[in-house]
Image (cartoon, rainbow, N blue to C red):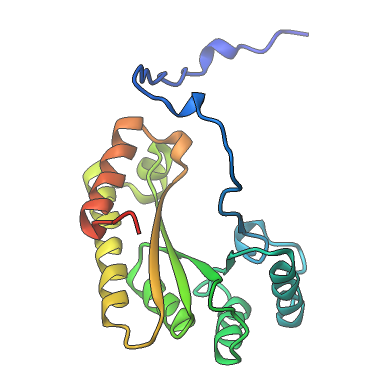
Length: 204
C-alpha cells in the first residue's frame, strides 16, 4: 500500500510575530462564554429542534449562567425567526443577557435579521461572508476587491439598520471572514480592517 503523497499539498505560510505577548499571559478570570447550541445552520440535526424545544433549551442555558447566547440564523429558518420574536415579545431575555444572531452580508438577509431581534435588550449581529480562495474563484467567481466590497457593503447596512432602529435594543457587531483558514492571511486582514473602518469600534 503506497504512502500518502502529502507533498502535493501546499503548506500554509507561517506568520512570524516576534512582538506578540499574549502566549505568555495567564488567564486569571473566566472569559465571556457564548453558547452557540441553538443555531441549526448547515450543521442541523436531521430532525431540527422544534420551537418549544428551543425555548426549553434557552431556559436551561440561562440556568447555567450564560450571558451571551447565539439563538439562531433568523433569516434562514422560520423556526429560528419565530424563536427570536417569541423570546423578545414575551420578555424572556434578562436585561444582562445578550442574544446573538448570524447574518450573511446580503441586504434581504440583514433586513430580516433586524426584524427578528428588534426590541431585545442586547443583540450581537454576527455578519459574515466567504473570503477563501476556493469560494471566491469557484462559488462566487469574484476578485478579492469584489469580495471586500461585499463585506463593506454588508457592514454599512448593519450599521445603518442599527442606527435607524427606534427600539431600546443595544447593538453590538461581530464580523467573520468565512473559511478563514482557506483565506490568504493578508487578504483576511484587509477585509477585517475594511469592516472595522466602517464600524469604528470602541473598547465598550
